[in-house]
Length: 393
Image 1 (cartoon, one colour):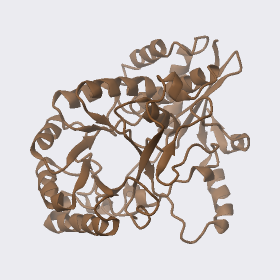
Image 2 (tube, rainbow, N blue to C red):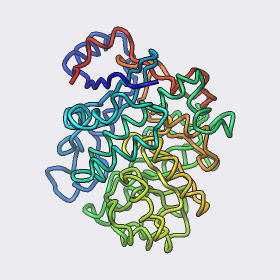
Image 3 (cartoon, helix red, strand yellow):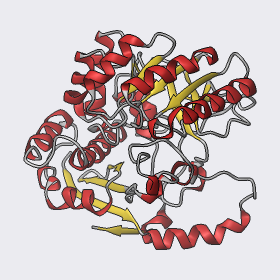
Image 4 (cartoon, helix red, strand yellow):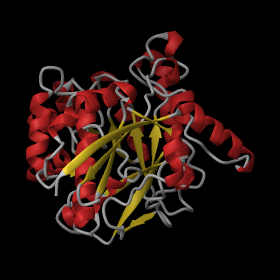
């Protein structure tokens, strides 16, 4: 089998917005969407500047999704995605794709190594690794489809029959009744809001604990907004509410800081890794024992090829891995089912893949649980009607 083409798409946002607007009238008034991520007060690295405090959309670059479609001479097609918009699409189309044409997609380790090394002059982290991630996911999708088996089989086979999902978002009203493992809250305030903000954070957690009762877990996402001292004090304040973990408290490059908080805080676990790249970045976290839970995003960290290495490194230190967006990204869900030290899958409040105009439906949790995927590959396909909604690069 040989790769014959590498097609790269980004969504045509104007056409998709128009399509969604036409369907909006059929959407219930109380239906949730993902706007809470960018349009509500959530602590972030820019919270120290008043003009960027209220909404992450005031500063965050929300790029279009990049879709990579790898085609082969045997008619097998693999799909992968990453963030990065036209910038990442350009890297793939103008540079990285040339190392794929004519190659065997089964040689995924060799191809990853070539792509990483050829991008070293401008890469190592950020958009170039995201671009490699999308290619890698498409290769794995292609491999498992060629074998006519679900992706988890190609990754080593299943190690569990079902996986409990937890939800991210600050609307906790239905988490308990829908059977989810727990609720991950987006902390609204950081050091810039002083002691008053600390109390408001604690009050959100208190209300959530009161609503969910003693048996549903609560986690706190801090989105790189806190510092070492603030995190330690905040953990003390949250201790009465039995928080499962606090996530991404510090900027990702503060490895020593992560080591300090992980050694100091005993009331909850420290989790991080969403904005880390490749096994080299995670090795720095492991060297300082900076977390008890690692959270690579497979669309950012280097794809499944790299995520498998990160999971193996973590297992050697008896650490848990819980991929960022693990229940939203179909490739990640297969990794969850194939990896012993991944116990949970994240799901987002407001996410509804059945309404996605580009991709056909993949697994969604039922009564709070994901069940073993059955279709060949990752279980993701571009809708036939979607190509008119895409820009090809």
